[in-house]
Length: 218
Image 1 (tube, rainbow, N blue to C red):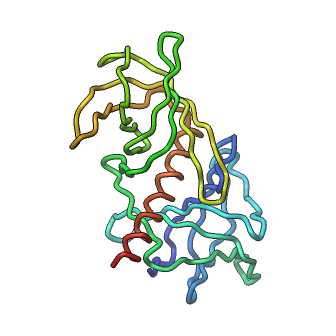
Image 2 (cartoon, helix red, strand yellow; image 1 turned 135 degrees about the vertical axis):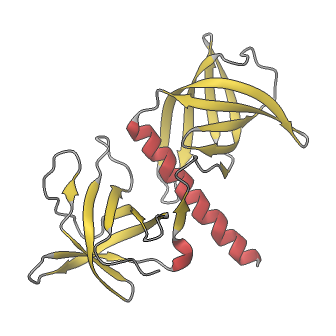
């Protein structure tokens, strides 16, 4: 995929850092599978950042058709010209994920979730998850009902072996049936920026994994 020169890119570290850093830069040049960017600026400190070779990032950008995309990249070097540039890897087209801005993308996946309610803890697995909420497979009767507030601890296993435990308050929206499964719709509330970023990163990885598996079947 060719990205228009001058396009603004947002870089988010992988894994997400505790202070929720983001960097903004522009694409200066593109050759084959390499992107050349100007030195990025930290969105919090407004200072120029010096990225270390081997650092990994999730890149998001908006194309000329006002469509948003994301992909993973790695810093592979520098190019010293009139404009000092940093070199990033450009993945194959099938590793670009289109971002739906109007609603959170739900990814079907099974991960562990602990639900705390009224001083009790219940263990479940998900049916799907997004940055805005998740659906739980209900394998037992539960004491909470529609509208109750609960506390979640979500286990996010990433492809690099990193495991993050994300905690957030949530609202129990409703129960419903899908085939033979009984599911509970859960909406996140008061989710920290870091927790949301980690969930977004996890959803992005699972989308990419699901796409690769579908291509293998084809």
